[in-house]
Length: 81
Image (tube, rainbow, N blue to C red; front, side, top):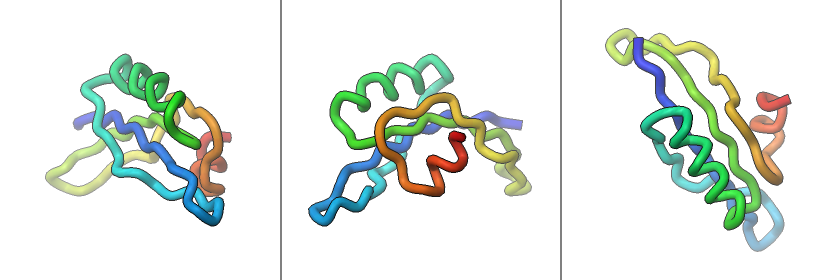
């Protein structure tokens, strides 16, 4: 089983909608937290999460939210609650 650490940031569009940026894979949890802190100063919202699974079978656990900052789309905010 492999654990992936991902940081997803969001930019506010011209009409106010939150638009997802390209997700960034972190090397580990500490790296994900550093990226979360760095992007928090630049983006409307940021969420860092991990997900474990087996790429060979395609079976993965639900995402575990590591941290959030700012405004998030409803589905991301619900996961973080």
